Amino acid sequence: MTRDEVMALTDEELRIKAAELAGWREVFYDRRFGALLGCPPNADVEGYKVPPDYAHDIAAAWKLVKQLERAGFKISVHTGMIDPMTGDVLDDSSAAIWNHDDIYWVGTAGPGESPRAITRAFVLAMTPGKP
Image (tube, rainbow, N blue to C red; front, side, top):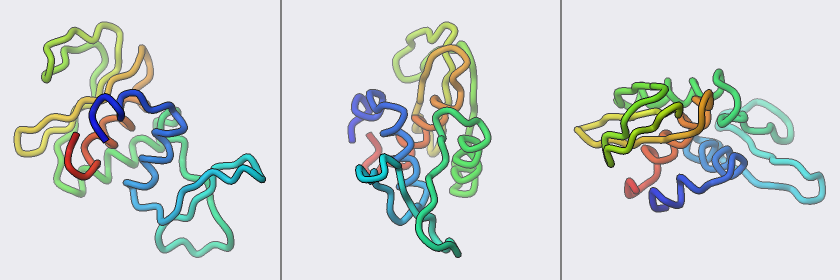
């Protein structure tokens, strides 16, 4: 996925992609039940569990931050800042920046949307091939 493709993902697409990159074995939408289903690794459950709503739940998004920290990333989450990649002013926007070996991945969202920004940055940082 390119950076533009990641930035264009809907909240539900972000949720699915983040869940896959966070280690969920299977994430899929079951049209019969109208539900997003998945099963995390080492889950001792019958059936499936729904992946967290990373883009809307700060507690769930913060688990992505912790996963990145364990992987050796340095994390900074800001509101109203300048994008270090483009120099664009992100007034009244939330942004999450991941720094690893001087490479930045920035996820942006609207005012008060830090969970969405964190989720986007997580997907950008964890996508193979680094968009």
